[in-house]
Amino acid sequence: MAGMMEGKVAVVTGAGGGIGREIAIMMAAAGAKIIVADIGASLTGEGGSATPAQQTKALIEQKGGVAEICTESVAAWGSAQKIVQAALDHFGRIDAVVNNAGILRDVIFHKMTEDDWLSVIAVHLNGSFFVSRAAAEHYRKQESGTFVHISSTSGLIGNFGQANYSAAKLGITALSKSIALDMRRYNVRSNCIAPFAWSRMTQSIPASTPEQQARLAKIQAMTPDKNAPMAVFLSSDAAKDVTGQVFGTRMNEIILFSSPRPIRIVHKADGWTPEDCARIAAPALKSAFMPLDRSGEVFSWDPV
Image 1: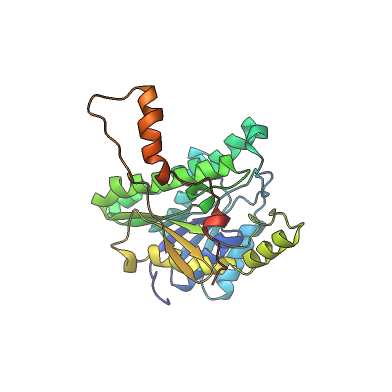
Image 2: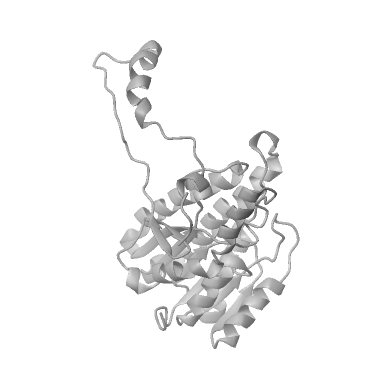
């Protein structure tokens, strides 16, 4: 790993703790200069403090790395521009962006408020666009650069009480694919990681029954640092041929996710009526319907 990002400058958002902190630390150990971007807000997005970012910076420097902090928000165009500008001001360039910043407003769909929805979309989806867009101008001119966006199986597969978070996280995969397509001509790559980890983003998982407690123990074993190696690899020149992909990182597993593709087609030469859809199409397609499952049901085996 040492030297894999030597000479590169990376912006890691939400790097004040959890997965973002571990990615920033490992990138610095691999030779990158780091902008630790974190507003220091609560899990639900309130308040702000420079302390989390400063703590990550200190951890990087203790290991001999180089880092500066930025406490601007990803959730607005102007402040996202300042995050990227911080890399230019401190280190003279930008080579890698990790869009990791996030908040949670988990609530069952029929009780979700306008603010619950807009706040989560603003940080996760808008934030990923704003920071990426700010970096894109510089990437295009230098004809190089990488994006790693943090997605989630809550969006790729589904989960209870997370309509806002799930919609944002699945939207990020489409954003990443679009960036990969649009910027390939400039040698710019864009990929997603759906991480599994115990962090403050998962500490609200209920643990009142023995089954829930057993599930929680498995999640707690998946420490945030397990997700960092893939982010470092995807941000390095070693991944020069990897773009437009969605990976998962789960304990010591690396997963490649599929994208939606046609799996079954029915055709009727003289066209369809609603009655035909009920009588012919639905029965013909039903065996290939996607199940109404959740992430925990798809990943039913213990993390290894």
